[in-house]
Amino acid sequence: MDQILVAFKKAVLNNYANFQGRTTRKDFWYFILAQVIIDIIYVLLLWLLPDQRYAWGALYRVYIIVLLSPSIAIQVRRLHDVGLSGWIFLIDFIPFLGGLILAIIDCFPASPKGEKYGSYF
Image (cartoon, rainbow, N blue to C red; front, top):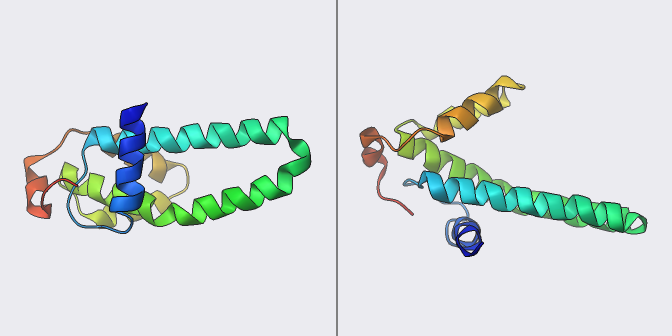
């Protein structure tokens, strides 16, 4: 659990809008896992406290807006690690298929071609 929090903190606080360099597969997936855990907690809070639905909804919208830049930045750095341009991120706008393709690419190991994008963060 500690590694998940460290990866999440590193992505959100230290590299909030850093689109340069690379990120490891482990750090990327720990960031995703932290987001999934937060989403599960949000759903549980909605289920346990249905009277507070609007307040929780407003708080969750703020959370999504705050994490938009770090989420895109870590995705771009992961694409750099695989040796691809960060602009490949735009494939995510293809409904259904784009997210699946990016998820598959995110599972690839680091490529020597990625070294041209710099060091790990």
